[in-house]
Amino acid sequence: MLKYQNIAQKIYDSIYQQQLPKGSQLANIEELINQYQVSRTTIVKALARLERQGVIYQVQGSGIFVRQRKKSGYLNLATSHGFTDDLGDLPGFTQVLAFDVIRPNTEIQANLNCNSDEEIYYIKRLRYADGKIYGLEHSYYRKKLIPYLNKEIAKGSIFEYITQTGQINIGFSDKYIELLTIDESTARYLKLPVSSTALFMHEIFYTSAGEPFDFSTIIYHKDNAKFCVQSHAK
Amino acid sequence: MLKYQNIAQKIYDSIYQQQLPKGSQLANIEELINQYQVSRTTIVKALARLERQGVIYQVQGSGIFVRQRKKSGYLNLATSHGFTDDLGDLPGFTQVLAFDVIRPNTEIQANLNCNSDEEIYYIKRLRYADGKIYGLEHSYYRKKLIPYLNKEIAKGSIFEYITQTGQINIGFSDKYIELLTIDESTARYLKLPVSSTALFMHEIFYTSAGEPFDFSTIIYHKDNAKFCVQSHAK
Image (cartoon, rainbow over all chains, first blue to last red; front, side):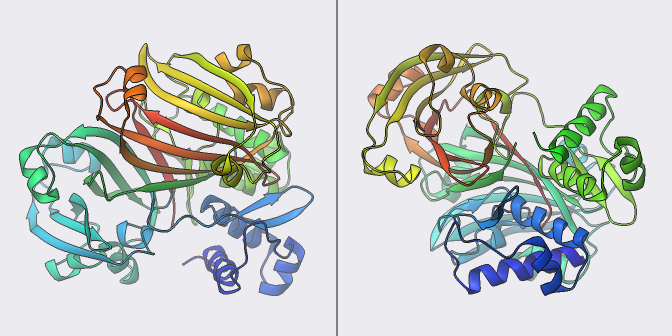
């Protein structure tokens, strides 16, 4: 974790430990520099990060304020933490339906920017949140960038595992969303009628060095999955 | 527009005028300070803004790089520019179905943080993109914060109008998304069968001073509306 990320986390923790309501004013930049004993650049970057995460807003010439916290039970689309962390406030459960090492087809190659002979982990998982079926996920991870995964790890948070073991530093993600009609196999997993409409997400996650390491498609259960985006400033 | 926003726009324009492909390296921070003749803080804030917008990524100790540009035809959820600007690459058209000044009910009061006797513009619009029905929008604007709107303005981009006339400086937004079954009236507008599933968005836009000025609900056409989120860093 970089220094500004660490400071951002400390400010975040302090906001929620104190349960500051929306609109609460934080210390100003000078005070934060003193309090955390870091450079102005570190504080500016930490505040930019908290703005990006929808935690605070800065009013020119006036101060730094706390934003409305996101409603419980909504998956945050504007972060790149992975399912488990983004849904933090609901208890989750994951069923691993397939775990294999495969060679990528052309679609996977294009999305992961890799060759046909690269080894790829293919993981199919059924996600639950708050006891309900949340979504069916097909994920492709590059073994070159994530040397070790197993079925046990896939039952929990792969993102937590790969970041904590230092295999990957997550950088950013591209997510594309559309509504699709589900096929018979998906309908069975989601326990929905065939031809139901579902929200379909196509995601690519990149390392902080800009290399794609995870390509996933997720079909979300129309009644159980909800989303939010807390975005910032033009 | 603040100085760092102006610099961010200049860097953005330079990337797309040069048609730099993804992965292209930009000048480093020292060079950008020289090139634009602004302070380090301004450059750091401009770069944070471009990261937030999914335009660039910064690799510690290595440099600043161009991200993959979003695919055409997807509405960007991670910005707060309003429909017209977020969908920039598709030609749009707007039909104004209702334009009134009303007193807010309790739901509108809660979302706009206003009293029951405040005047509110209610605007109902049918949105088209690329010649197709895109969504049905119900919007509520606080007249207190936006003194002047009319039906003519509502045919175009209200966000462009209120920012260009200096009435509002847009700060940030909260967007909540879920799938719902549409009612008969909505089905008629969207030209879809009754009981179709649609993506339903509940948005609140805030000024840069943190005051909510626009509460909207939008029901998107399931076959025509697509979305993207280019998010950044844990």
